[in-house]
Length: 136
Length: 93
Length: 116
Image (cartoon, rainbow over all chains, first blue to last red; front, side, top):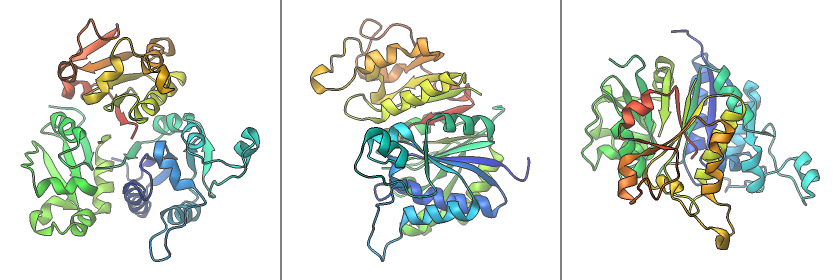
């Protein structure tokens, strides 16, 4: 068993609706501490809401989007919101804003928007792909 | 003997249809980790996992279920990462 | 690497099945072997004669019928769930395999993935 593995994390549960982004963040921190590499974080379905720059929870609550953004930046981990999921749910970057002539854009840095190909690539190339879904 | 034991990560309560599907899928050589609301299944339902079973400490503590879990049956996030390292195949239910 | 994409939610009332289908199509588009398992209420994706025009949704049946063209290797239905929802070979899309052994099915794939 190699000591260091390459992980892709897929988050499909939305923040403030499910625990998925929180569980994923605690898992990601533990994985990095253990010396593993996180190749990519992929947001799918309702999970794309994590990448909104407009989330503004009360100041005494944990800001999951901010925490994730800080973690990704600190460790230089690329994170992608699925473009099809994102556009349907009103999450756009400047490029998509221009393309669809929308009044605003709201993608939080360092998140990016791309297709499911990134997920396929990550699952193919990495050692583990771990999914974080909404619960019940 | 199953050549590739699976790590099952379950975050659903027994009322969720996927819970039952997960139970059907478990093999004796597999490992089941209960996380999030999944840790509640030990409080109410008769959980008869045919394989190794762990609950995630943080979720157990948050829901005041410490007395229902043996410390040998709990993992922290570090332990969860180790389990995903040990198992080539991981299913998140 | 073979991936089994699992749909366990009924069409129309929930969006997640469509996003599961997109995952399967994506794998196939990148030449990765993919199969789909329909279980629980998800077997209702397989019912013949769906007419969602009035709902303003695309037909799940029509979306799904493109699966073999896109290169998805198999559509598999959980036999028990089919019985539960009264689905028989006459009321179901053609070309769907039935499975009564979920354990075997899950073991036969490198990855088992839900979309939500």
